[in-house]
Image (cartoon, rainbow, N blue to C red; front, top):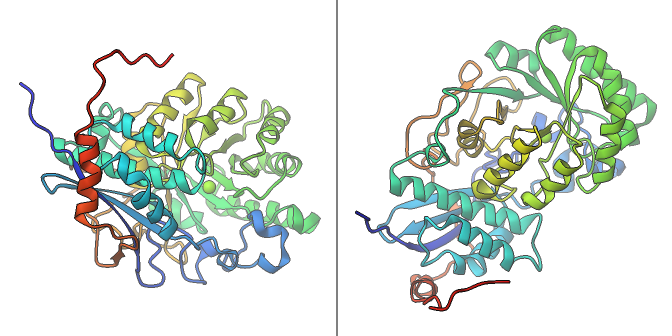
Length: 426
Ligand SMILES: [Mg+2]
């Protein structure tokens, strides 16, 4: 017996006006004296080539957009929430453009809504902000669907392939992360090619110093945030290989696909794993990395690459290439995905405390009940959707639309009559 399923009544998009230091979705929207802002140890980045912007990341506006929250409401009043980096421009795209593909839809039609949002934004989308906006809406739909079905998202994706999810910690203090029980740790590369030979030597000393503090057996990785060149990457990875470098991450600007191939060729046979994908978008982008077999691990951000709908396609594609998927941060969105797929072995947790000395929610005060790692593991509760409660205290809806506007858009979808003739698009 089929049961009736409520349609989506409205889509809303919000920014947050949280107090300073509450980063929300944007892990770089922090106080100046925060380790992830490059204080006091610098962190190489794409702007490190400009002396004016070498000190603090916020000086070049990494937090200019900030948090965006998408909320979808079903006819029965149940709501789902998805988030991304997008700020007011992201809200504009959701309210003024994407909402027409979602309002009035059956929330079970995730593929249809995703495809329509993606195709309709091709003229200005494909990567970046438009895909962030699609991601937030997609995550909100999955959250709603889970609540309507009374199931966690991981259960809707196929159920658990692991009882507990191990977590590694990205931090300025891998010694503390080790003591907290994390499975591994990742530090950030302080200097790039613009810092010359002296910077290179300091990079090696920096890694060596932490290796000595955490001992030889604790996996220790290096994140280079798009700051290096192929030559510099190979030289650095080879210099750190005898010091037990587990993986080198995000070392090139994301458009340098040939550079990724060059690094793979030069590093073939090395014990150092090559990882990237934090700044890649959609299956089309990841396909380029998979086809050239240039990385061992893909690291999509689930709130940016296209949401769960696109992430599950990427996980399937990666499995056919024997590539692991270890998402960038993403908290609950990564955890639910990783519970459900075999080639997602360990999650990333970024220590967002200013001095990296304690565990705090990755999304700041955005959720009342974000699950946190304990002794190096995430144990997800058996709660519907993504299992978290949005704190709405600081939300503001910059492109407010009336209920009538949503209803008019919804009726276009509800009343659409498919042709009785077979539709054969070839
Ligand atoms: Mg990274």
